[in-house]
Amino acid sequence: MYLSTEAAQRHRARLANTLQTGDLVIIPAARLTTRNNDVHHRFRQDSDFYYLTAFPEPDAVAVIKKQKTTTTYILFVLPKNPEREVWDGYRCGTEGAVTEFDADKAYSVDELDEIMPNLIDGSTRVIYPMSDSSFDQRFSSWRKAVLAKVRLGAQCPATFINLGSIIHEQRLIKDDYELDLMERAGQISVAAHRAAMTAGKPGCSEHELEGLIEGEFRKAGAQRFAYPSIVAAGSNGCVLHYHDNDTRIENGDLLLIDAGCEYAGYASDITVTWPASGRFSDPQQRVYEAVLRVQQEVVDAVRPGATFNQLNTMACRGLLREMQELGLVDAHASIDELMEKQAYKPYYMHSIGHWIGMDVHDVGSYGTERKRPFEPGMVVTIEPGLYIPLDADDAPAELRGIAVRIEDDIAVTDHAPRNLTYGLPRSVDEIHRFMDETRAS
Ligand code: GLY
Ligand code: MN
Ligand code: MN
Image (cartoon, rainbow, N blue to C red; front, side):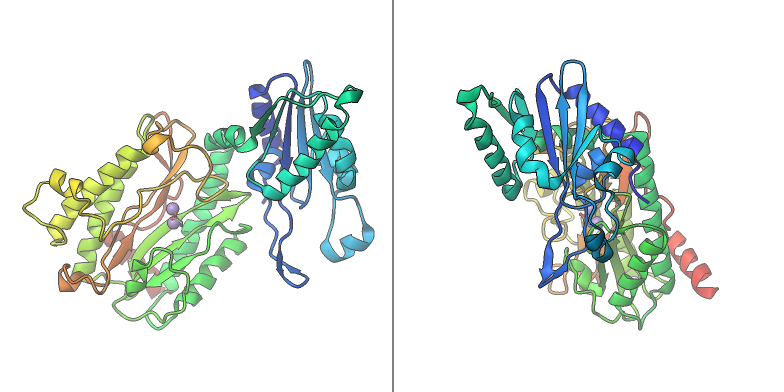
């Protein structure tokens, strides 16, 4: 499943509404990158480019030129080449760029160096990605070509703007179509996690579950994972970015699995924690329920006007309250005193969440001190956790080696938060029942 050309058209129209007459926007596609020798990494389109074009091929460049009465959309694409297409597959070529992808005009990428200086000449502002150094060099050569002709009447733009500062703000607010794609991504991931919960018994290995989950993603039509899956048994869950995924799962282990697919260019990001045996031990249950209470409190606070800063404070205060109950921090100190000392840090060291969209850690400003107020159409992850390493000598012995994180993707709406990753058994009872029912059949 791919992003629809109608959606890309809507995104271009929204962008054009924010542009001024005389603006030129240049958006390069991603390029193939070498893995080794003549083998490439699997291609993934650049998110900004895909958002505005829905065009799936590498090496292209899109241009949007805003004039007084018209906005022109130009695509530079790899030209048709029967010989190359035998090896690399179909290219839609310049004709297809117009008929299939709605370009007003299309040229071969071979013509970029000739045509682009003419497009830049006379524009007042040029908006292009400044963070891509190889594209920046290329852009600089086009600008120089314009400057070289100033005495002949060429006009070099006076203002250059980073594409991200405009398009990333737009991408941060998702429309209903995008939210539905994100819900679909979320639901594919939920189904994959449910399959792993059914299959992940003691004796199987982390990598078997990784393969099972990613296989479920592909079976359901997702293109890929949105980030490398973390499948961590037992105390491996204390390593926040654990990727080895090579340990045998033992009876008594908790599984912490952080995995999400990318569907039609949109990410999902889910963490589940559950007992391989099908039953939480008493200490595991106490830590799990502590994190779940905090996660549910914070999810409910995902409303317009809230900020990551507030939610993070809420999570830290909630986790400190739970840590007092668990004997992880001083039970006699006030929460304010513990906050002052950041007493949660040994057991909760990341933040409560991030923007999510086409990129799992999505674009868009967080504001100073992460105090940007949430607005409808933004999507955030809420992912508190408690990680108690085996060598945490200050922690009660029975809690050592326990790692729990619970993560969902939540859309901000005018009303109640919309959970895009609903449908997982989350309470201890639900998990026990789910294990009993699915593993028995
Ligand atoms: N899976 C990456 C994250 O949770 O941020
Ligand atoms: Mn995650
Ligand atoms: Mn996340």
